Length: 325
Ligand code: TXA
Ligand code: MG
Image (tube, rainbow, N blue to C red; front, side):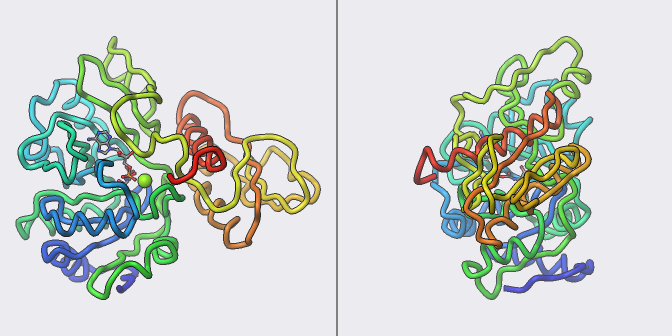
């Protein structure tokens, strides 16, 4: 498995061909790195599940190059979903829609709906357009990390996390550190009003502002299966504790305005919420590289993008309560 740094158009074309041939390609997006496979190739998609160690019934997001491809994957698309797509794609938003015949059970976890997203990273978009030129219809891509573990925001993290499980014909495309650092906002478009299933950079108020009177809810207890919504997820090996007293040797992640407690090891000191999300997963990984046992985190407060950060850190902190996820 090769890491391709600063991929040229020719190298991206080669990666698109590798996908068509049934291999896996990890690629950068503006949120986190994805582990991609041809979304119509059952065998290739099943490798995603085995490499990640992900249970088969957890659905995958299908990535497409533009809204023009949406009707291949989804049917009965409500007007508000089209509005959302026109406004926020390419971007950090996944829409859950009724599936077309193309979205098979091995993509949707046997549900009648499918998640679709147009990512905003130039390498991802070029990969998608080259893939489509070769006859591809969509790239299935979960975050490029082991199931339940911390998402990857750099190609090095992808290699550390999955490198030994990828084979020689799989590819990792390098594209810098993911600009946002937190996964896409997932919006269910299955009823009259949209529902936010996973908070992200497209915030509730951005959605409400666009759609006018239509209200949306953050519904963390949704009954639609989404592993990002399991209580324990996004977890490093170190125990994550929200708030509380630090002991000497604990890791510490908080906004820069909070001083490092005596004896604690500062893992990140972001100045803003955007910096917080950009640095968060790398800081959690750093704790594991340093062999720390515990990380005290102070999530930022707020109901907008801060909500996404708080959501992920809260899920990261559940690893001691639920095992096996
Ligand atoms: O930012 C992102 O969304 C990244 C990049 C690579 O695009 N992808 C990502 O994928 O975070 P993943 O598989 O790690 O998380 C996607 C979440 C999962 O919780 C999955 O269950 C949910 O989306 N999901 C996908 N399809 C769904 C569906 N049909 N219904 C409900 N949830 C779905
Ligand atoms: Mg994930």
